[in-house]
Image (cartoon, rainbow, N blue to C red; front, top):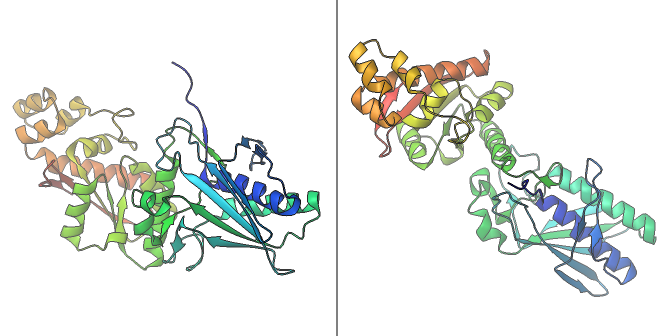
Length: 347
């Protein structure tokens, strides 16, 4: 099997497009391909997909290649338009079509700012400084970043819940997309906790999917931005809350995933952890019931065969969570559901 191919973040693409556009604004020619320097020193080159030049501004576009990662922004056209700014203005950023604007506190950007994260901003500032030095520019520019169909793509991300409205965020800390690292999802979990803390919420819920999210919201009357789309990343939620606590955490999920958490697994994906029926059987005192659980085909069948197992799984899952939190001031509770959203266990 061939090795998975790495890709490039939206921040790297925006930096490359900015470099090409500012070079064209100063020289009249677009470098194609255009090379940039990433935070760890790599120097990838990007082919231009679009280019446009007038006396007032230059625009370059790059199609994002996420490599072999199932990234929702793979194939998106990232554009940068660069205009001269007033003397001494430095580099300013604008959200173009398809790039969101921050509307809630708690993110690493102020409310009202374009959703262009700090590392991509610094990459673009550095690129502007290099091009200005090479071609005798002032370095005073306005950069507008846009993503074609970005508003539509953003509906498949956490952005609306985080209060990033109108489009995507321009992301990336290294510039490189590592296939199946799920770094964007984990980063969204962290930003979700930041937004909840900034809003003053004292109760958040980490949910494995949409059904458990609806159950947690109904049980506790939680607002949407207190609901964390945890997916399989229980460890990401718990470890971040250990450092950035919220007074109360509810973990809600299906019996299969929370059976894994009960057994001590923090990554609940089927490729990285499995339901341990021997472990589930060990929770049951009755020998006959334990035998039935041990021989069940699924965790759901196990809890149907022995309904008290639901509460036992919830209690063990809560114990795992508390172990990871290591005494952080976070009170935990667990809700276990079946596929239809019926609660089959609580702790």
